[in-house]
Image (tube, rainbow, N blue to C red; front, top):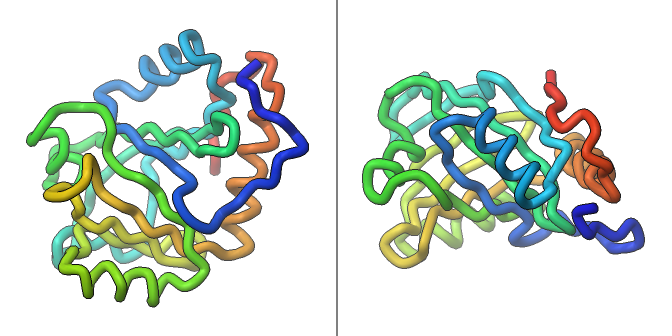
Length: 180
């Protein structure tokens, strides 16, 4: 069992996710499942967002992601599938694969983004997904990774809650689940 307790209160406001870039998503899922007993993993192949912008320019970055929970922390694995410039390549080229960003849920995306811009951080990547924005701020000069603001709405809450609930007392069956 991965240690999740079903009576805990799940929060989507603040740091709620830790993400890693990996060279081989299938191998990483197998490793994290076997060694850490994390799962089930929800995989979004060719993760699609609308209006993907990398450092001010449109991008066609192609990636597949997988997410699960460890207690109340969402764990995300990301494999970039093409070689276009991206926030994933930025970190990989600087220091290799591994930790990439913290995901921060926010119910006031505009205020959170304005606060980070006022601190001098630039938006490195942004997109719209499930009717709400996502934005990565490049904090790598001062922190170990980037910070991603995840605008929370009912659809996102439902998605994260379902992944969390599936992880509670996960028995190891059906370790990979494709999200459509």
